[in-house]
Length: 289
Length: 277
Image (cartoon, rainbow over all chains, first blue to last red; front, side, top):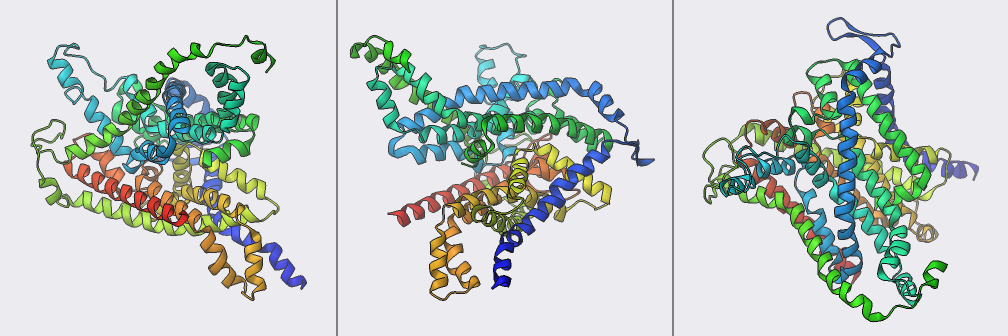
């Protein structure tokens, strides 16, 4: 009997063990290795030695803070765009969708059936100097002949907003969908105008969804480099591009590790502070759908 | 609340005019956004039928089906697609098993360390892809493991487990333990109870996790590119080709994957609806 009870008590550990080990070895330990690598000095030719030197951090920061701040700014603008573009759509589907709700959500998710890289590449076609959008505009002399969209920050931020918009719409929709219609009737009965009902009832109740959406949009947008390299130019380089170049072109692993760590620390501290302030479970649950 | 109550009673006519205006603004906006979301998909499908001559498939030059006939004429691209598909299958199997077990533990039991495991999953989902890719690469560089096919598998399982675990956890938490107790009372042993009661009830969550993993795996660029070595997957090939012009075969493959995915999703939804009815 005691043996059986003991086995029963160990069950969750056995169930969790394989997945936990995988995450420990390939997620937690690599993060620590990266931290250690970021404080090593040397080069690929001489080899890297552990010197607990923080010079990599100060050096890379003074060298690349422009790209770092640019990434945060691009991420913020893209997130605000996603919220202003996506909130009305989520609202419309949640309150006016009726029987078409799941079909409309499916349309919002449609881009995910096409590879991220191909979608971004497709925008490159559309926005190119002699592409689908600008060719007719230029031949109609609606824009100057040397007008271009690619390689500008507009193209990159637009690409980011496009790619991460569904991550904003979905959690906002989930939060709005949970609102009991009786609450809206009650506020109407209490003579709230539609605007007041929205501002004082609907919007506050949708905030968990908004927070989850902000999280799901901002982190991938600020750390993305696919949009910047396919739609951007030399002046729109983001921190992800720098990390990638440092690892693969310059082979400066220690500096690249320091940069990644700065990025992770900035984003994760922000995320955890954010989740803490709002209650982790709530954000997490809504994020999971 | 009192501020709302203090307001004078409004005549109902006052809202009529703005309502009419609101009536068409919201759907128009939403359909414009949906159109915007679908525009690149439309362009991708259309240009798979483009009779393009030069290197850049960017101007419409007439309708053709030749790229569908010559789908597999670029050996590197074909290899990349094969690699992507086989990696996706392996990753889906491993991540679904590990994630399901983890999700079951989290959804049913209270145990020491449950909070830290939940935190680990949250951090894994919240962490930026570049950092996940870079830290795993740092490990492989430090230990001296050459990057290639299997390091891609390791990396993709690493970012998929959490998604499966979260979906299964939700399903498991909603599952009534009395059903399993009933099975045991009827004489089923632990293994039989698991395979004939627990797992079938968890299946929708497991399937959702598996499909999500497959989609994430076949689509992933950033983490994969950090750990790919010389192995090229489909997104990696497309990214590499983007500087010198993407051949129309990529559009065709993208279209076929898109069509297959949509078909699968629609069929799944139909089966679900029939089961519920």
